[in-house]
Length: 271
Image 1: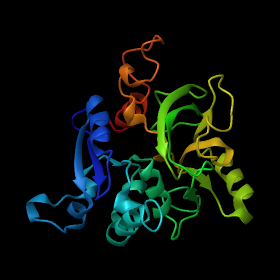
Image 2: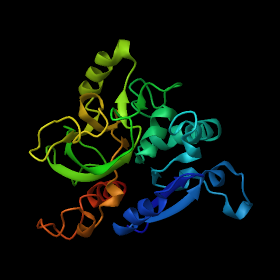
Image 3: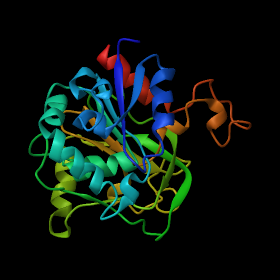
Image 4: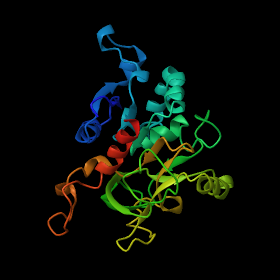
C-alpha cells in the first residue's frame, strides 16, 4: 500500500490537511501535504510537484482563502487557471478524487461535480448554499450509503448501511438552479450519482437537525457519473478510531471508526 501516493492539496485557510493525511496513512498509503504553489511551479525547483505522479487527490476541509467570494471559489479558480489540463487528465485516467466539506465546495466550483455532461463543466452547475439555520452547524450526522453501482469509495461500505461522520459547515445546502432543480435531481438519480443521504437514528430520511443544512433530497455527498470523483460535506477523516465517535463509551464500537472505510476503499481500488 505504501506505493499508493496521495496528494493532500492545501492553500492558505485549509485546516483539515493533517487529519486527511493521517486518514490515508492509517490505511497504509503514502500521503503528502502539497501546497497548490508546488503544483503550479511557484516555488523553488526542489519543492516542485507533478499532479500526475500521484494516485489519489484529496481536497480537505477548511476555509480556503477565507471563503471570500463564495466558499471554495478562489481555490477552484486558481486550480482551474493553472492546472485544468492536468486535473482533467487525472480524472479521465480514473484516479480517485475526494473533496470533503470545503473540498466538496471546491469540486463544485471547479465543475468536477456534478459533471453530468463531461469531465469538467465550464461554470458551476450547482451551489453549496448557506445552511437553512443561518449558522455554522457542528454535530454528529448519520449518512446512508445510497449508490447502487460500484464506486472506488464504497467497496467497504455496503449499500444501505448507515455511518456516522460529523458535520462542521455553514454552507452545505446542495442546490441547483431553481428552474432546473427537479430535472437535475432526476439526472443525478438516473446516473446513480447520489452516494450519501442524511438520516435519523432510525435510518429514516429526516429534516433538521439530522439534515443539518436543508440540502436537496437530504444529499450529503455526490459523485461524478464515473464514480471516481466524490464530494461530501461530513468529515470521515474525523472518525478514524472508535474513541472519536461521540458515543464510544456507550456503544460497542469496533476498533476502527466509521471514517476509515472510505479511505481504505479508495486505496484498495488503486492497488
